Amino acid sequence: MLSAGSYEQTSFKPHVPGNLAGSRNVPHECIHCHITKPSGAPAFPICSGCRLVRYCSREHQTAHWKVHKPFCQPQKHFNENTLQSVRASSEMAPSGLTVKEEMIFQEDDFCRLHMWTLSVAMECLVHEVRYQFVIKKRFMRIGLEYRPNGDGNPAKTFTVKYVMSDDLPDESGPPTPIDVQISAMAKQYDSYVGTPGYRGLLNCFYEVEGLPGSVFPIPIYEYNPVRNGPVVSGWYDRMKSMMDNGIVHRLLGGAWKPGVMVKKGKKWVFQERSREALFAEFGVRVLY
Image (cartoon, rainbow, N blue to C red):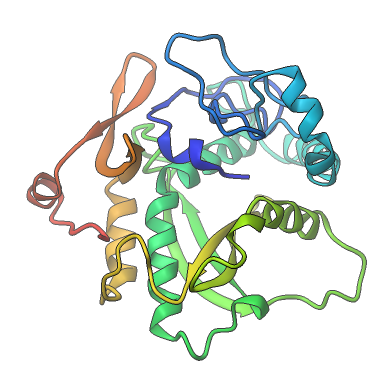
């Protein structure tokens, strides 16, 4: 469940042995009131069930439980089952995690860092075929391939293999953990309903060979109220080039800033770069 805090986060820590899905890089944003942790303040406690969201106080966790419960309990079981399966089928990495555990954490970091780029790319795709694409009946499959020989940069650990759309599965059977996760995520966007031009949520699934799938939603509009510009031609190649070169966007001071991740000590920290500087260094034109 990726929130605004995912976009604002500028520092990513390396992963060490511990609970699966208890990533050290879960954003320090309260899922109930959406305030972010002030610099230098103690860490917001993480939910001990799903290990994917934080709260600024026990009171807010209690107040949010009715909304969070349908997501939290299935996610907890999913985490436990995944932990058992990946540990049983994977060798150890130098970090002390199994290779597959480490890849799950790295995929989560990669998704958080590139979420803005992916959101723009998916909007471009939908608007290219806007009268042929029914948001409520389709979803996107985004295939990622692990790049094991990288330099540790969390923005460059995967590359995109494919982007394709598919029909949503039949809802007549019992809900799967993914179905429950999608439903819980959709509740976070209830306030979007009725917004002028809002078409609905586009569900996107990440697929990495040998790992369980992950999902995130993107709100889609008839036109883009933020950029209000034309669809970018060649959006797929530009998206892929940005990811392969580790170019990301962070939401800083209410504005989207492009840049790269640089290593400082054991952490990887966002460093803002102008679009002109990125083009001069990488030959890549960013999406918007």
